[in-house]
Each structure stands twice: as C-alpha cells, then as structure tokens.
Image 1 (cartoon, one colour):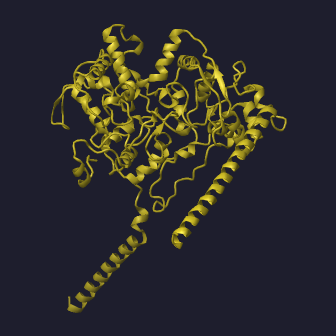
Image 2 (cartoon, chains in turn brown, green):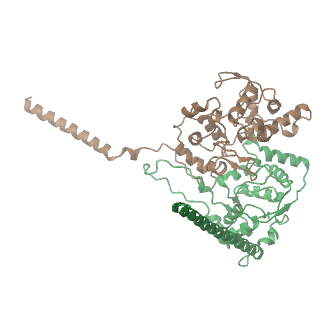
Image 3 (cartoon, chains in turn purple, blue):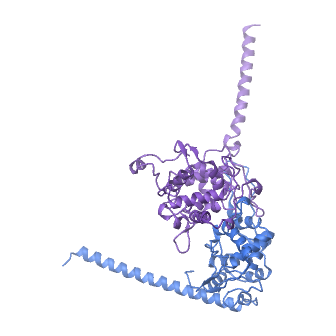
Amino acid sequence: MNSFSKSVILSAVSILCTLHVAKAEKLGGELDSLEVRPTLVKPQLSLPTKLTEVHVASPGEFFVPPNVADIPNDKYGDMVRMGREIFVNTQISAGRYVGNALNCQSCHLQEGRKPYAMPIWGAFGMYPMFRNKTRSVVTYEQRIQDCFRFSLNGIPPSVDSPEMQALVAYSHWLSRGAPIGVELPGRSLPGLMRTEDPSPQRGEIVYTTRCAMCHGELGLGKKTADGTQYAFPPLWGPDSFNKGAGIFRVRTAAQYIKANMPLGQGFTISDQEALDVAAYIWIQDRPKDPRVGYILDFLLPRTGAP
Amino acid sequence: MPSKPVLFTAAALIAAGVIFGVIFWLTSRANDTTTFALLHTGKTIAENGRDGQPACVQCHGGNGEGNRAMGAPRLAGMPAGYLEKQLHDFARNPLKAGVTLDPIAHDYNKTPKIQVDLTALTPGVRRVDAMNAISATLNAQEVKAVAFYFSSLGYNFTAIPSDPETLARGEDLALRGKPEYGIPACASCHGADGKGYGNHFPPIAGQAPEYIVQQLNQWQTGARDNDQMALMRNIAEQLTDGDKINVAAYFANIAVSSTGGVSSP
C-alpha cells in the first residue's frame, strides 16, 4: 500500500471520528443538563378530600400507663398527685425553678404518656444511664435536673426537694408494670431516615403552612386571654428552651416534630420536611447555653450541632 | 427671649400634636360609628331575617343562647371570626368546594420544588340544609355584622349534670386524650376549661352535649369539613360513640357565663 492510499484511509477515519464526536457533542448540546435533571423532591399533590393519611399505631404496641382515677388514696398517692400537678402546671407548682414559660407537658405530651414524645414510662426504667452529654452515669433525678436547667432554662431543684420527690413519685406511678432496663416500643423519639441536608429556607415554608397557626408567625407562641400562660408554647425567643437543651439539636427536634406535630397528625410530615423546619427553628434566637459564659456566648459561633 | 429656631421648633411640635390629635379623634370616631353600624345591621338581620328567610333568633334564641331541643347551638359570645367563617362555609356550594390543582409541570427547571400547600384545604363546607339556604342570601358585610353582633352578646350557661363515671371518662379524654391511639387531648387546643382559643379553636364549654355529639358525628360523616389542616377531622374520625358522649357530658358540665361586650370589629 502506498503512502497516498494510507493517508487517504487515515484521513477518512479521522474525518469519520470527528464527525461522530461532533454528532455526539451536538446531541449533548441539544439537551440542557438543567432540563433533564430530575427533581430531587418527590412531587406531592393534595386533593381536597381525604387529604391527610394518619399513621395508625396499633394501640397494643405501646405500654399503657395507669389511669389517673386509680391513684391510691394514701400518702404515696398524694405525692403522685402533687407530681402530676407539677408536671402539668410547672409554671405555678414549681415556678421557683423555671426560667421560661414552658411546662413539662409542653414537650412530654399528654401528661408524659404519649409514645414517641419522650414518654415518662419509657424513660423511668432506663436510669441510671450513661449520657454522652455529661460523659457520666446519671440518675433519674439528675436527668430531671438537666430538664430544669436546659429545657426549662431555670435552676435545677435539689434531689431532696419536695418538687423533685413528687416528680419521681409521679414517674414511678406512671411506669407501674413497665419492665426495668428494657427499651420499650414508643420510648424516646423515633428514628429518621437519611435525607438531604436540612434547609431553613424550605423549613420556613413548612413552618408558615403547618406550624404558624398555633405557634404564631413569629414562633413566640400564643398566650391565653388573661396573658399569664401560653396556650401554645413558644418555639424560640426569651420564653423558650435554651441552647443547651436536647431539643435544640436539629436532629432531635426533627424527630420530635416528625412523630408529634401537628397535634394528632404525627408521622404525616416527611423526614425531610421535619429536618427543614427544625433547621428553621434552630437558626432563631433563644436564651444562651448556661454552660457557656456571656463573653464566650457572644464571641463563639452558635452552640449545638445540627 | 428664646432664639428663633427654638420658637419655630416649639411651634412645629405643637402644630404636629394638634394635627395628630385631630386625626386620632376622627379615626376613633369613625371606628365608633363603624361599630355602631355593624351592631345595628347585625341586630336587624338577626331579629328580622332577610329576603323572607327565617330570622336567626327563631332557632338560636333571642339573645343567641341557643335552643337545646332544636339542636341550635349557642352563638352569644362566640368569637366573631369563627362565626364569620362558619357562615361563609355554610354559604359555599358543597359541589364547588375544593380546589383544582394543575398537573405537575413537565419543565422541572421552572418548578424545581413542589411544596404541599395546605391552604388548599381551608375552603371547607358544612352541610346543614337550613343554614345552607339562609347563609347563601347574606353578603360579606352582612355576615360580618351578624357575627359581630352575636359575639358581643353575653350569656349564662348552667352546668348540665351527668353521672360521675361518664364525667370521669370524659375528663380523662378531655385532659389526656388517647395517647396510644395518637389522639391529642381536647384541652391542648380548646383549653382545659373548654373556653376555646382564637378564631380556629371555638369554645366547646357552654354548648349542649347533643350539639357536640352531633358535630363530632358530622366530622365523621364528612358533612362538616371546614377545619384548618384537617386537625379536628383526624381526631373525630378516631373517636368511638362512647368517647363522644363522655366528652360532651364533661364539657357540658362546666358552667360558663359572660357579660358580653364589644371588641373592635
């Protein structure tokens, strides 16, 4: 084969190759990558009838605490009644220890009975327990003290104070029949699936459409007509939990929101929406972490990990 | 003698004060006349009806205290915004209720995120034949006036006795709900005393127990479907007949009264 025919073949091949590449490039160029990219959010469509599917928990799945009418009429029963009164009406019955406008019942819904809302019957049998927060083994009383210090933004009652004894008595009565040291179903909070990173921008939309009706457009809660108590608890602002509280963590808040909010419609919000709205709540202003000094609180970036 | 700028500033301040005072007086006077006109219109419609329709007072009582035998609820002292919304929902044609949502656009670049807009739920319906016909004849201003008139009335509701076991069970449901079923307590939104909160959570104390049971039944059948975010509907759907009777007896056992009064419209 002479050099001429070689060169003709080579050039023909190269021309064919370039044509092929050009064709491929043209194909890719026709379809803008932005246009063919699928949306990352599962499209949902609300229809005007039967809009919300509610997660129906099988009631036999969860531990059922005893009835309030069955509190015994003796000194133990009196203590339990006092504990219940503190639990429901913390602002008045244990007001000297509370620094914000929340009650125990604000988070531990329905007098500490609701599964997946950190029920008392699920927690009582698990203590003493090692906690990562303090890197030590804490007793049930110490755990309640942390509730007062962080979630209620106040002063922890001492272990032998009547309020603490009453709260422990109430927890003990509420957990009657529950096993010790067993992780009961409905204990603490449910898990979250792996999601995208939380976005406060998307969370704001969820907040406005689903939360603002009760907690207010500004998240500062809504007060009763006489203005002494909150009918709907504040989510941020001076009357809310501080930056050291467990529910200040985005993930914990998202787990709580997913299982319990809006009231009576637990498990209707997606994990992504729960995380988004938790991130939106996280970026708002609230009392400082009591473990951090004022100067550090001013200088350091925000406490709490998302 | 003070200098000229000082005098000028003082004169300007006084003039501004006078002007603002006049404006405030005029607006407050206008507000008074609006209130009076609203009350007058509302009272006229409530007592005489409109276009040959029966008057409100025929069933709901001369002072809006309700009629237990007829199943007509108390209107006196209910929040004006709540009454207004109910009248609008009564007037809405049930066939036309709901919203048509466009199908999802194919150009995902233009609609990258589709949010669930729950306001789509809010135009609700209530099917009560008598009220559907009456409400359809009222215009928005008249609805506002009637609602404002009834919200300004006082009432005196005496507690309706019931047997202790029913009351105890009703109290259990009202204060604690049914946690293992995911039913929240009535008290968490309607208040422990059942006095309600705002325009979306009406008072349930001070209503006849038959009315409460009837409403819960209507939530279950879908004859009433006008709540925000289907909150009440989801709860009512899970209640048993016994629950309804117990909780209605509990709230009817609370005596409530009000002297009435006018808040700004």
